Image 1 (spheres, helix red, strand yellow):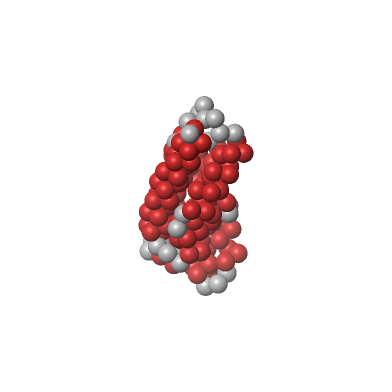
Image 2 (image 1 turned 90 degrees about the horizontal axis):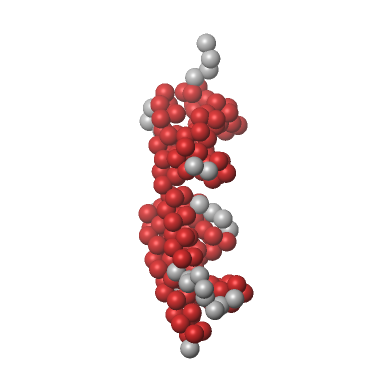
Amino acid sequence: MGVTDRFYIQRCLDGYSEDFRLLVQRYQTVLLAHTAGKLGDRNQAEEVTQEVFVRAYFNLKKLKKPESFLAWLFGIADHVVKEHQRSKQQNRQIADSLPEKSPMSAHSRDCALEQAIAELPDKYRQMILLRYYAGLSCCQVAEQLNMPLGTVTKNLSRAYAALRKSLLRQEQNEKL
């Protein structure tokens, strides 16, 4: 009879964190298939799957039913997939807010974006820099700034709106 998830989970909670890799090995293929099916892109699915295991590891104490570990992982995966899709959509919206046939050169757009980021209030600027320049997930940004995840996502949404407004204003000034 094989070793149960409950055994590895308990060992991790008892301080043997290296045993978590055994849970990863056990479920990474099925979780990758799950996220790839939802995202339609294997590379993105690998990134999301890794994020799922990181979140699972750091939230292992919150798992109420160790025998339902896989179901719990799927729940985390669904949440991370939605977060990833929202982030991708927001990035697309920012890019779409600049007209395609803009007279601005790529260098001018980069400078405009840097200026727009510099104009953001500190709390928004920090989140944008951590999220997109440092490559952190929203969850990691929340941990870094010691804030609830909902506050981070709400503030990022406001920061995107401020960036779009600033970039459009800068572009209109360029046309004049």
